[in-house]
Amino acid sequence: VLHAKADKQWTLPSLDLLGSGEDGKAGGRQEIERNAALIEETLAHFNISAKVVEVTPGPVVTRYELKPAPGVLLSKIESLNDNLSLALAARTLRIEAPIPGKSVVGIEVPNMAVGLVSLRDVVETNVFKQSPSKLTVALGRDVAGAPIVLDLAAMPHLMVAGQTGSGKSVSISSILCSLLLTTTPDEVRILIGDLKRVDFTHFASVPHLVTDVMTDAEKILRALHWTTDEMDRRYRLFARTSARNIAQYNEKHTGPDRIPYVVFVIDELADLMLQAPIQVEKQITRVAQLARATGIHLVLGTQRPSVDVITGLIKANIPARVAFATASAVDSRTILDMTGAEKLLGRGDMLVLRPDLATPIRAQGVFVSDQEIQAISHHWTMQSGLRYDRHDKVTQGDDRLVRRGFGDGDEIDDDRYEEAVEIVMRANAASVSMLQRKMTIGFARAGRLIDIMEQNGVIGPPKGPGKMREVYGSSRGGDEA
Image (cartoon, rainbow, N blue to C red; front, side, top):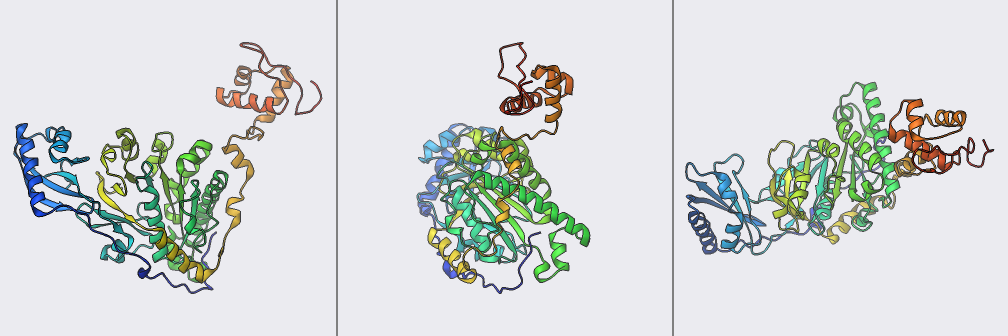
């Protein structure tokens, strides 16, 4: 089991390493009043009586809260999205009907200039400071400017998705920086899978890393196997000490007997799923279902939010999701189970769906610069040196498991392979249907066994529909049958 090291005193980074943000330009009072009047007039053209009762300027958009007259169908207001965009000369509009907890409709109009929400702006707020969890991360500010923070321990896993250039990787970097600002390597350890190879290089030397930043799909799959094994080891440890979760276990132990939280970040998930979909889905699903009590949490990022990447099984087990701008409403539905992300502005504009909310919150994501990341990483490297407490065995797991996941045909990964060879040798003939009948197995498994036998030189290639394959011998290079 991964344990804390009690032989080192750590100093947390100062917030002086971070810069401040900039406010968005929502327009002056006259412009806001003009927009409010235009909204009311446009709706009146379509015989909809409604009045703007409140205006809330935010870092990205200004929200106009509309009180419709009794009897007005909200669907009629929603259907006029394009007409309102034309009247206001807006790039895009988002209508929230109704705003949760209010009897008003929200119309979100983009500001002339998008505000910059810095990491410092959020971590200095009381909402962030007063959170008791070690896994509290800064995400951004909502339409009204209120800070949005998430407790990864409560989520307990997070999916971050959006098209290229929408701000996804910056958001994941801000999550990592939030952890590095508030926790020591004895409290939180981090695994990073960076298949794009360039997004997380600045984190390569921080002592929180369990192993080096992984840029190879096979290493990430091995690390996923290690993560499930670590989860099982922790559950056995909890059973011996009568602890229900990591918090209870750490309350009973001090120093090197304590175990740290583990946060596993994977970006880009689509590349990993492309190479080993079955194994990756299986391992991610198992961790997502069972790892919460053991203090292991996933943060998954993808710029290709399609159903073959964010599968139904993965989505069902990761209810906390952040959607940045998407190319289509279909992609938005894949991430959030609803439309809306296709109307976002990009550059950090996002919708945050938490497990405790029925509808997502619109927010402007935190921006963290390369210089800020380097400053935070340098602070930690100066205390620990390079490659502090790295566990290289994490990415040196069972090759057989990894090759099976990546479809290596030379691996015999079926425990009934020898039985299938015996049947073929006895019959001096081979076919998928014959193995199905003799072994009472499905078509896919029988076909896989036939393929392995062909690759191993036991049988010959197919001769045509309805014809049996020729049998050579019991193994590649063996005697003729």
